[in-house]
Image (cartoon, rainbow, N blue to C red; front, side):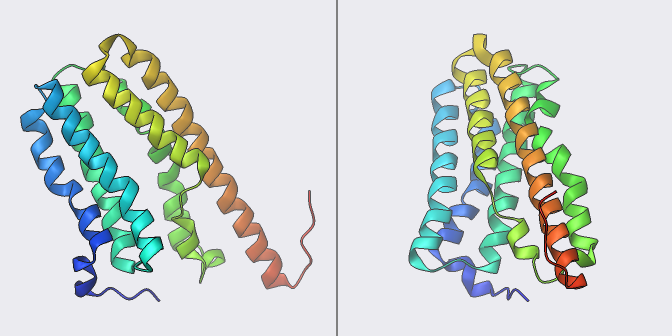
Length: 194
């Protein structure tokens, strides 16, 4: 079972993750100024890139970090999108386009959390994969375009919806495969390729 220690919040990777929370508070106040908004986005992107890398490199991967990082990501992203919607820099359909991955993942997360098939394997379920990282990158480009290149917003949002949907589908595929392997292991059968 994962161990949550308050002292782990003081580790640099977790501090970097947590920095996205005050950046989320600042963003709505600077969003009208493109340079300031881009600076806040860049700072958030850098903390997102380096928190995980630093945690792995320094051996400071913690249960606290595994919770703080995605919460900070979601709070920051939600604040940015809602601010840009409020300022009418993005169309209303931007919300489901940017949340396509999360919309597809939500039932999967519930299933993984309640299913006995995943007992003892839940830690792996949270890992990002290449489609997930690509979706995050395309979503970031869509947000950047809303601030710096408004003519590209709709095209980048379509790209974000497609990339997010593919990431959501890949997560489902991975977890269904894990469930099948768990079922086979419980039954003592040898897995076959179908």
